[in-house]
Structures are given as C-alpha cells and as structure tokens.
Amino acid sequence: MPKALSPALFAAAMAVLVFTACTRTNPGPELHSPSAPMALQAGQQQQGASADEDRADGAMDDDSPAEVPAVPEDPPAPEPDRTTLPTGWGTVPAPPLDEAGPRIDTGIDHVVILVVDGVRSDAIATLGTEGAPTWHRLMAEGASTLNARTDPRRTYTNPNHLGMITGLVTDGDDGHGLRSNRDVEGTLHDLRGAYLPSVHDVTFHHGLTTAVFASKPKLDLLSRSWTPEHAAPSSAREDNDALRIVAESFNELDDAETHAVALEFLEQEELPAILFLQYSRSDGIGHSSGFNPTPGSAYMRELTRIDGYMAEILERIEQHPALAGRTAVVLTTDHGGEGTNHFNLDHAANWTIPLVVWGPGVPAGTDLHALNAEGRADPGDVIASDAAPPPIRNIEAGQIALRMLGLPPIPGSRVGVAPPLQVFAPAARPAEDAEARPAPPGGAPAPEAAPALTP
Ligand SMILES: [Zn+2]
Image (cartoon, rainbow, N blue to C red; front, side, top):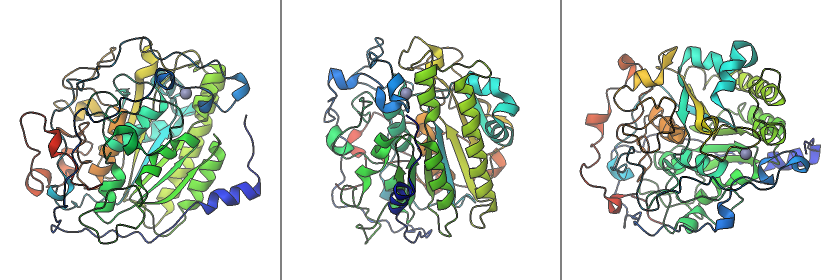
C-alpha cells in the first residue's frame, strides 16, 4: 500500500547513490580487439522460466497489495516461437563494439529514458494538453507516435524493460530470454546462458556512464547484471573495475520517492550520458482500479500526477548548465492495460502504446512513422508481431538513446539496428554512419559475430 518513506529510509535510499566522475572523452578509433569475442550462441539461452514463472504480473506490480487480483494467467495465445525472431526484425546483429567506430558528435550529451509504467495510448490522447501537458508538450516539440508496440509477444514489465536496454525481443534463440515477470535471482547472463550486452556496455566502452532510478524494486534487473563484477570488460578501457552505472535507486513502488531522488541527482554537476527513470504507480492503480481511460478515473488522475513529475524533470534539465540544449528525452511505457490487467494479447490496449522522442535536432510535431517511412511500418490496428518492416517499438528506447548520443548500437542486438529508427530531421542528421562506421555484415544471421565483449 502507499506509504511515506521515513527520513532514515530516504537517507538509506540516497546512500545507494554512488557518484563518480563522468568522462565524456571518446576512446577514439584505437579500439583494440578483445581477446575472445563472446558469441551469443544460438540455442544456449535458457528458455528457463517455468510455467509458473511464466505467468505475468502479480502483487509485485501493484502498490495496493490488498487489492491485487490473483496472479493472472499468462496470455493464452499466441505461443511464442521458440526458435526464430519475428521476421519483421533484422536478421543482422549490431557489430561488435570494437568494429563500431568512435562516437559521433550529435550535439547531444545526455539522454533521459523516461518510462511511465502501464500507459495505454488512448489515455494520453484523451487527457490532452490539459490532463497530460508534459506528454503533449514533448509530442508538440518532438517526434512521436501513439501507435507504437510493445515486445511482439510480451505485454508486461520485465521483458519490455529488459528489451529497452538490450535491444532484443524476449523470445527466440536470439532474444534476451527473460519471460518471468517476477523478481528473478542471479544475473541475466546466467539466466540466458550467455553474456547479455546492454546500453551500459556501450556507454562504458566509450568512456561514458549511466544511472537507473525506478519505482519497482524488481527493476534492479536493469542494473545489477552490469556491475564491475558481472559486466564484460571493455577492450577500450583499462579501468574495467570502474562502475558502468554510477547511480541507482529502486524503491517499494513509491513514485514520489523515485522522483525526489531523480530531482536531487539532477542537481549534480557531472551527470551520466543515460539516465533511465521509471515511474510505476500508474500500473499499480491500473491493477487495483482498472486501466480506465475515462476522464476523471483513478488511473487518469494518476497519469496526470506523473505528468507533473515529468514537468519537473524537464524543468531541471532546462535549468542545468550542462544539460540545457544538450539533452534528449525518450518517453515511452512498458505496456498498456485493459480492465485490471495487461497480459492478454487479444486486447489492443495492452500493446498499443506511445513513444515520444524530444531533443536537439528532432523535428517538432513530427510523426515518427512519417520520419521512418522506409524502415518502419505503421501497424494500423493489429499487433504486427511478424510484420516487415516492423512497427516502432518501446524496446528500441535504448538504441534510440545510444544513437542520439552518437554511439553504436548494442552489440548483438537486432531491434532498431538495420535500419535504425530515424529521430533527427534530415538536415540535422550527423554526417555519419555509412562512412564513420562499417555497415553491419549482410546476409544470413551470424550469431557468432555478436558482441566484442569478453565475459
Ligand atoms: Zn502491471
């Protein structure tokens, strides 16, 4: 149930913030090859989650445990394809980091990946500029769509959040493999049976850092597998015992607490390249009172409250001397909702979600599908799991952030790689990719070519 954190608990939460100097130097072209590239071996991934684990959300997701319904069944259909990726995604994995070239100057030094848990698109449309002024400001000043999609077959928290930072769908031999929606034990590398590269690896390789603040305690899965102890060493760094993630905070479903920590963090002089910030009470209210898009519902009021948090984050960005004019925001959600749940693929509201990109070089008031007429297809009113070209998906969030920072995609990732999602106006696109970075090898899938990171 909602609770206020005591000052002592708040202090404890703040104590987990670890600040280190954040360098923005590029390692330059001299990226040496690692000793033994770690292949993402087809078939190695542990399909692992038991039938029980495979059921989706439970009390973990709700901030009103007393009202949480029984653990719902996993979506009954369609069964995920265990052997192949959806055909709409590229068969070409992102190249190893040491082949990916140096960072490109895009004019952007920081990206906030902002995730509001459980947002159905029609709620944002209905709230309008009055009920969701920050959503609509970012849409008016940036590029967006209210017809983005979740992971092709998983409309719940863990798989979609992990997809955002790995650039992988959940299922298939090349998926990230985290189908459980519960608090998982061990590292994600162990779960998968192979090293799982993430945005944290790419930023670290290029001398940058990240931070993760989330309201769901189980979302420590976004950071704990990339501690110096568990992360792959970078061939470009000699200080591989340094932190990739310089600040993190996870609390017991308390958005006010997460927000306070984030605001305070944004007062620091040196800030990481990527800040992943997640608010979750909208999901808890959805489970207890319904993901009800009717004006005035508890769910809609909660979205308005979180919109106010978002406004304060933007204000902090615009007041910060190092962030103002050099920061982008990628705003999306992990899934939508229908009734008091979000697991059934038969309900379009579970997988019809918003995605907004805002920042320098992003053309104001633009439809992301119009900007990506060739690389992405508007899915209309279908889930489009296997469409080619694929729809725009929330699990591209990390790739979008890296690209806006002028960084290469996550090694071995498939989502948003070929082609990447275009978010800059044509005139603002850096004179980049084709020449600065070798194109990924064409032809058949080559999982052996995956990440240049040693375990
Ligand atoms: Zn949920």
